[in-house]
Image 1: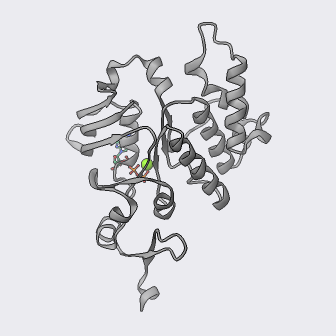
Image 2: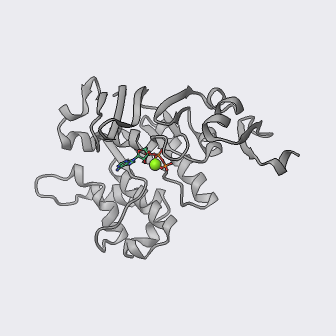
Image 3: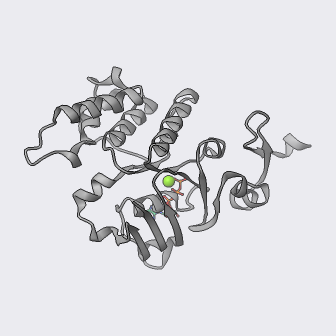
Length: 262
Ligand SMILES: Nc1ncnc2c1ncn2[C@@H]1O[C@H](COP(=O)(O)OP(=O)(O)OP(=O)(O)O)[C@@H](O)[C@H]1O
Ligand SMILES: [Mg+2]
């Protein structure tokens, strides 16, 4: 299994490129973080990889074949996608929301099997959401809802997990839990691609980072290679310092305001 982009780009309006010339490979057993400032093209890249949008230039291939040449049900079993924002369309309970993740696996009759129910329960257990099962999704807090949506994506049991800022609304403990879980999945052979704004979290958990800047791939590699002050400061603007974590030796990123270093 291999998901790859080959010079991929996308323009929402003709001539206005949100993303250009992205070449990257995503393999099973790895966890990749996509980082970059607001508007740099992270969500656009994930939409292309998830086949929500078709590239305006270049190609995205799964096992050597362009995404649009795959059957849509087979693609849904291979690639799970969690968008950055989700507007609940109707009053589903949390359990029903997670059950939607099993949709690509249902037979012709559309019934949930014992195995489907087991996967739903397992995904809710992993995301600490079992207690919300009967409650309408609309009634939950932002972070609780984000965990239920993550459960729905996990229940899909796809080889490729594409997650757009899955921890943006989570408290410190749940951020750590979710990233640990995603890393475990990657160690068990799934391919995890996660958009993250928290560079420290990304550095801690991802094998590799892709840094986007104004729609271009600015850098790709291990956290230590990508997260340097020289590289981050012009991309994010301002004065960024990269220290070494005293316990883990991983890069520790902080923004220096004038006040901090004077
Ligand atoms: N539906 C759309 N129609 C037109 N332009 C869009 C659309 N979605 C995104 N864009 C533009 O494409 C560029 C990249 O947007 P994208 O959502 O990929 O950024 P991002 O890196 O995910 O940002 P953020 O960190 O804010 O989520 C931006 O300039 C944005 O304004
Ligand atoms: Mg985004």
